[in-house]
Length: 165
Ligand SMILES: Nc1nc2c(ncn2[C@@H]2O[C@H](COP(=O)(O)OP(=O)(O)OP(=O)(O)O)[C@@H](O)[C@H]2O)c(=O)[nH]1
Ligand SMILES: [Mg+2]
Image (cartoon, rainbow, N blue to C red):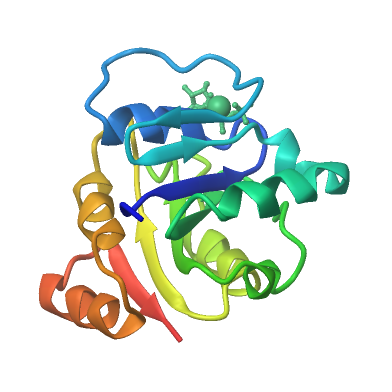
């Protein structure tokens, strides 16, 4: 399987804007109504994770990907994921925090929220608007083991990237 990532996170959390930034598309994201397969990215509607009725769609779609991005909005004080949600999806986990540029962003809070969702893995702190941290994501999706990812995080030594274990 070609490496591919599914992005999951709450409604309006910045998933589609991130996808556009990753694909170099300079257009404004519209509300996502259904699964969107775009090159190496699968974008999901926020409702898929906010409503447990849709969990089966997430599980089914995860079979099509090698990696999953668990996305947390830095301006939100709550997590939309059940605790340890990543345990149910046997794919490489990547945490992404969005909107770190926002005046009300709390990156430490977002990091702590993601650490309840992911058992381990990299967490990337990003702003799609200001193009911060974005360039770290595509290389992570090319890595196939957590050991390689851990080494990548160490080598990059970036303020926008940590490895949480
Ligand atoms: N400040 C700031 N706002 C952002 C950023 N990225 C996205 N937004 C805003 O957040 C809102 C939601 O963005 P979307 O990308 O549509 O969110 P989504 O997660 O795809 O939402 P759904 O499709 O409804 O699940 C929009 O108003 C974006 O402009 C960012 O990096 N910084
Ligand atoms: Mg969307």
